[in-house]
Amino acid sequence: MPPPTRRREALLFYLFISPWLAGLLIFVAGPMLASLYLSLTRWDLLSPSRFIGLANYQEMLTGDPLFWHSLRVTTIYTLAYVPLDLVGGLACALLVNQKVRGIGLFRTVFYLPSVIAGVGYVVLWMWLLNPQAGLVNALLHHVGIQGPRWLQDPRWALPAMIGMSLWGVGRSMVIFLAGLQDIPSHLYEAAAIDGAGRWPSFWRITLPLLTPAILFNLILGVINTFQTFTNAFIATDGGPLDATLFFVLYIYRKAFQHFAMGYASSLAWVLFLSSAPW
Image 1 (cartoon, rainbow, N blue to C red):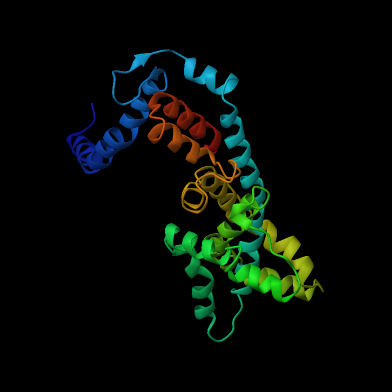
Image 2 (cartoon, rainbow, N blue to C red; image 1 turned 90 degrees about the horizontal axis):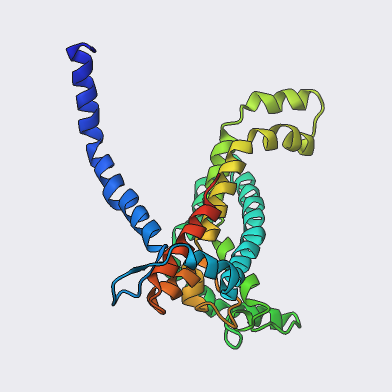
């Protein structure tokens, strides 16, 4: 039997973490278990739920083409955005890692767009990409290029959405910058003494020592892209012709437009399993 001091310490430990445990059980574990049960039912918010087993998942896999379409759109978006975000964030981090006057201002300018509210920057980009009065097409017109219809064209809507999302590359830049500043300077000094230039130092020192930051940004980027909602909901509402029907937007449609809460819960569990960093 543990001594009274150990028992008192254990009691105080559980007492101090009890608010967190209560929040976990009430606001996380409880809703997740409820969602798991609802995914096995048919419920429209107005009538009592009816248990149907795995019928929602069977319908999803075999009789719902929009499920596969939304998953494909989200996957394409992830495969295009995440590498661009990694490369762009690393490039910006290398730029603002220099010891020059006013570098703090440059870091702020690069990072500031990533903290702007989602709706605000989407509305800004909707104006920039306007086919008739947008600044992007106006600049293209000045160099003799006929700009596309961007968010109003099924071929260009998803690429435009990817470009809009790169507005927040400052988030990954800050993480890369922290990783760069953790690399010991004597490694570069030793490489310079041995005659290594900038590129060999980058490939042999910088990139290998940045692998934790790269992995972190990669996982965070995949999770964020699979949860994309605001951009598509505000800018296109999934259109045109479902070209930007992201998976979370499809869940929203099923839950709050079609009132298929059971089916939406099953979609949410597929999202959880597909975006979890296993």
